[in-house]
Image 1: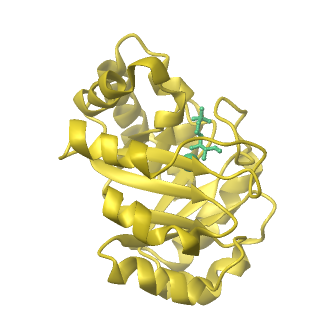
Image 2 (image 1 turned 180 degrees about the vertical axis):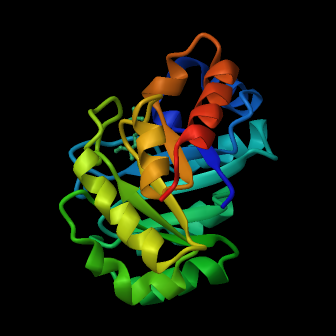
Length: 220
Ligand code: DX5
Ligand code: ZN
C-alpha cells in the first residue's frame, strides 16, 4: 500500500495561508487535507470552497483531499469539485443518500471517500465499501484540531484492512509520532496530522521521521 502523509490545513496560521500551503507542499507530504465544517454537523465552522481554490492556485500540483464535515454535503459537491477537490470525503452519518452521492463525486471527476465517526459502528460502512476509493476512520470527534487520539477507534481500521487488503484507509485526528505508527500497525496507510505537523519549525524533517516510524511499525 502506498503510504501517505497529509497535513491538515486547519492547524495552519490563517494569517499566512498561502505560505503555509507551500510549506506543507515543500515538506514532502503527499497531499493537503482540507477540513470543511458546518455547525450543524460539528460544533464549529472552518472554511469553504474558496480555500480549496486558493490551494489549487498556490500549489497546483499538491493533491487536495477534502473532508466534508457537513450534514448536507450533497448540496455542495459541485462547488468543491469545481474549486479543485481531488478526493471528496463524506460522512456515513450525513443526511443524504450515500450511494447516490458517492457516485456523483466520481461523476464530477473526484475520488469518492467515506468517513466514520468514533461512535459509529464500522459495519455501517459495509453497504458502501465497493463504491468508495478510500475510507477515513476518525480518531477524534470531529470539530476541532489538537484533540487527543482515541485509540479505541483502531480496531475498526483492522476490521476494514482484513476485509479489504487493497483499500486506502486513512486516520484523522490526534496524529503524531506515537499515534501514527500505532495506526499503521492497525492497518492504516494514510495519515492526517494537523497540529503536530504545523507546529514543527522543520516540517520536512517531521514528515521524514513519520515515514521512518511508519516503515518500522509492523503492519498486521
Ligand atoms: C477534526 C478534523 C481533523 C483535524 C486534525 O475535526 O477533521 O482533520 O484537523 O487535526 P489534529 O491533527 O490537530 O488532530
Ligand atoms: Zn479531517
